[in-house]
Length: 272
Image (cartoon, rainbow, N blue to C red; front, side, top):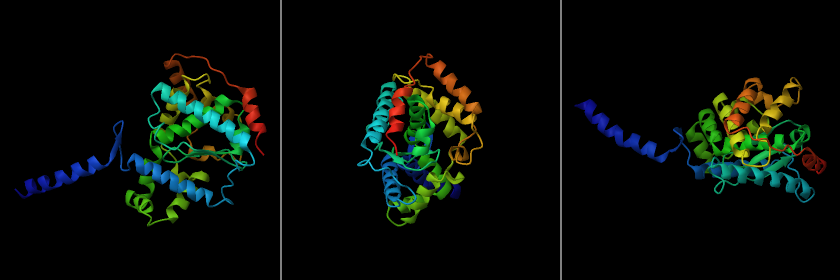
């Protein structure tokens, strides 16, 4: 009888907990979508508050660079929405920023904001490759990988305390972990494979070659070992991922797209 009473008492609590949490494709996420957005905005503010660590490229001084990156962003968002795969196009912020450092890295925040280092932009050779990287980062936000990972690393209560204004230093810690490519916030292999898959799905309806993220990995394989290669520190080796990206592309029909090397060169020329 006592055990039966315990079960009856526990069931409403369990139901309430599951009801309060959000569920994406069967994956339980302890944060709501609105909390994803709030968390992303707070970390974005922390990044802007530390220009020595994160020298955000001035839009006033380099308007053409931001015109290019936003044009590419809009292609990815519109194509992703057209494919029916991008779930939060009209809800997340999707602001894009350029960090002026010779670092091969990009990172996504919950709620859609993404950051790209000038080192990465200059390293790539065509717009399809950059759009592939961008679509991959968008997938991390849209599939809500970031808050899942942060919860596992820091704990739900700790992150929630930051959202409530009781732990302001955590935003700085999260920003540093993401920007420095630390293993602490590395996505799981399943997250990375899923982001690759959705990068192809987002880009496929566009005129861009949807295999762009694979071209990026192929280029990186040729120069593995470079000491500035931050991207590899938190991402699985691309060899097995390239094949899967091509498989996803063929599964959608194998449509050829454009890589737009000349147009992308204009983007690179607009940087410092």
